[in-house]
Length: 271
Image 1 (cartoon, rainbow, N blue to C red):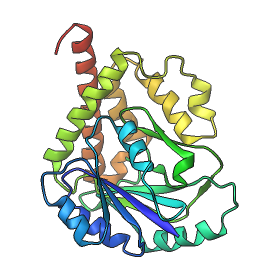
Image 2 (tube, rainbow, N blue to C red):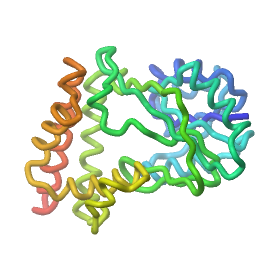
Image 3 (cartoon, rainbow, N blue to C red):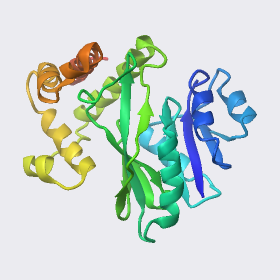
């Protein structure tokens, strides 16, 4: 009753585990961005259907993937470095049969890991919509994209595990170097939310709406990298996650510092 969609780009390291975790589905689709490693061969060997498309931006690319013809009305959205727990897999297969007809999607909690430690306190955005009816879902924002669903969202009880450092710190830093460039370009082009509301940022019922306004307000603050580090460490309690939490908070502050530097560079007419 559930199809699976996995987006890939040179994921030969993580893809086998992702495919094994959704072996219960007989309709797995790998949407690949012209990988140069063994990603496509691995996907085909596992029986997945492979689609190829050149990457342009995150929202457009993911929307193109959602336009794939699926066997089932519900699609589970999975990244190669994520693993649904056995309990989550069973729950998803149950709820799509029991959910009210107007339900458009399901939100779950994702658990990020570093050094084998769940970043329970350090993780900034733990809630994601990952089970959807594709014709009722659309991604917005070219970087750190947001999934918007047309209809009521229900909650899943069991978690999805995420291993963002599975390829090492070098790959994580390279990826966030690209992200920071795209974030800076959005800020300079004024493509972020221009009239954020503190009330919405704090009290809105929808998590993603809150995050959109929080992010826009945050971009207006001075000393953002330091504020982010202090917030993650002592407000959210990253220090309680031990060495993993301190490391993650520091990496996130460095990521914010790159955005600040690149925004200033672009505004001065730099590269």
